[in-house]
Amino acid sequence: MNIGQQIRSYRKENNLTQEQVANMLGVTAPAVNKWEHAVSMPDITLLPALARLLGIDMNTLFSFHEELTDEEIATFVNELYTMAIGDDAAGAFAAADAKIRDYPHCHRLIYTAATMLNAALTLSTMTANEKSPYTEKIAAWFERSAESEDDALRLASRWQLATLALNSGDLDRAELLISQLPDTDADKDLLTIRLLAARKDYDAAALMSESQVLAKVIALHSQLMQLIEFEVKTGHNDEAAAIAEMTSRLVTLFGLWPHEAASPHLVLALAQKDRDAALHAMSTIFSALQVSWSCSTLPHFYRLAAADRLPDITSTFTTAFVREMQSQSEYDFLRDDPVFQELLSNAETEKATLSL
Image (cartoon, rainbow, N blue to C red; front, side):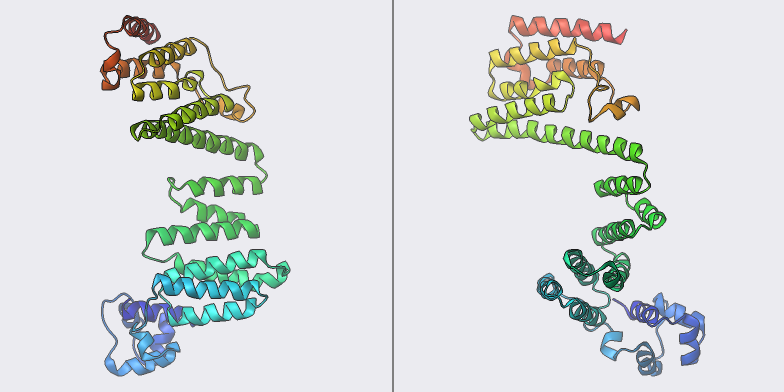
């Protein structure tokens, strides 16, 4: 950390403007601005006065003790937590404050201490009024760690700040903080659902929750399908069969597209090169594709159906499945089988019909 960042951090901590620092040191505000942005350095003769003005020593000004190791941080915050849950919240926060003053740019320390003390505060029997000053301190720490150059730490801090805003009922601030999270962050959706519920927009919250459930079920289905193959490749055929059955039940339980209930058995059969099982699974899939499907009556997805967010993928799946049968090497051991040839021929005809 350079001296400019130290000057900026401690200036703000002391509620001083650049103009005030400049006036006290007999320089211009643009000069202080240049120091803070590492464009220039303070004159060496100003350093002792600058350190005294900021309430720090020269070692701190030059960041001679800037970072703690992860092990040191873990040991310290565990001590804080023990103090906090032992009814010494004041002592824990004072100790954290002192350590953070010693390491003002160790954002991992600041974030970890804030997170641990926030957890302890949640378990505390203190009243809301008694917790208030501590919650404000925690929020201030998260604000500081949100300035970290570490992307993960910065985003985690923003998530914590959004959660604090939701908990305090400051919904406009929560919305602003949530908007600053990347769309790819799964936690952003969870916070948005909480925000919608806090604003009593329960239909929108429920719609978004349905979408989250669907995404997680599909992701779980995909992972289980991969796991079937891994178990076969490692010689654990009984485990693979059990997972295939489990995956099939998952599809049925959540009312997903009926053909997907047979897909895990096909994956298992192809991995094991079981001709009869593979042909049976394929026949079951094609039969299921002839049945119309809708999620409009499902209690956990009917809002998605009404919003046209969960369409019937029969046509898309049929096209992709036929292409897979035609080109993927996993089906090579079936190509001379007349049943396979008939299934593929019928599927190609069905595909052509769907494309009309």
